[in-house]
View 1 (cartoon, rainbow, N blue to C red):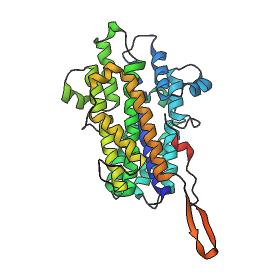
View 2 (spheres, helix red, strand yellow; view 1 turned 180 degrees about the vertical axis):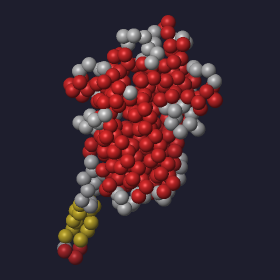
View 3 (cartoon, helix red, strand yellow; view 1 turned 120 degrees about the horizontal axis):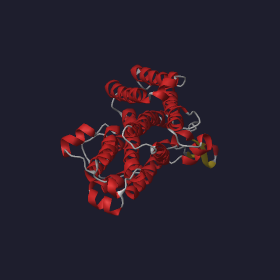
View 4 (cartoon, rainbow, N blue to C red; view 1 turned 60 degrees about the vertical axis):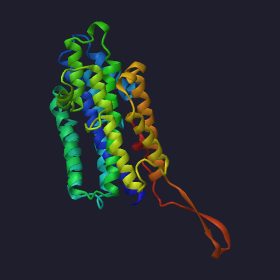
Length: 346
């Protein structure tokens, strides 16, 4: 498979997953605001911007972190590469460039997704009543996943797409958890109170994890919520599950056996996955869950960089040309300029 095609499929899936997860981010706060004390709203919306790591960019354009400003920034800001509109537009551009590889149903769903968001830009009701809109965003992403799984051959292209989606999902699950555990950490007096339970329930719902968590653990417990979202091996949005399945796709692409590595991408992803294999949630919390999540995000970025260097980066080939009496001639790789904006993450 051409690196240009693999790159486009990989990033098409990352962008669609990112758009869905930004909608989930906002939904966390929308649920929390229903039960939060008066006067704390701006604090929670500011925390959401802090989680993206783009507070300076937001402050320069919008100033105060109000609900209206944060929703506009994360949803419709075309100058912000991780807004929902920017992500869906980038996914559509990537899909257009590989229409000969993906199914027509996949293209139609990406295009429908883009039009849904584009038409909402001028709809004031989205800002006033955003919950229904963000539910549609999540549903559109789910539809794309199902259509891709059902209509695209499960070869290299499918694995590149699934790899991108899983890495993006693992990163955003860690950030959703970080919103509550670090940025919205309650006072000692609030721990274990109904208010604390409401916040943890909102975090689980933002990852569509509430029912599956209750089936496994029953009552809400901060340590068990963290255990479920970080270390669970069966729940599809848990960080550990995402890494296990991402590693399977990475090895399916390269053809190397699981448990070995032939390139930096396999080495870094395997090392990070193995750390979660033997992790214990009590030890993680004792040493600092926020610090653990922050380190995890950095290592996941390193995995993404290694995937780019291994599969997508331009290379020069040194080829001997004896017929021309030249010792060596350097030939450029196929003309392809990677879209650097695609390498930006929240």
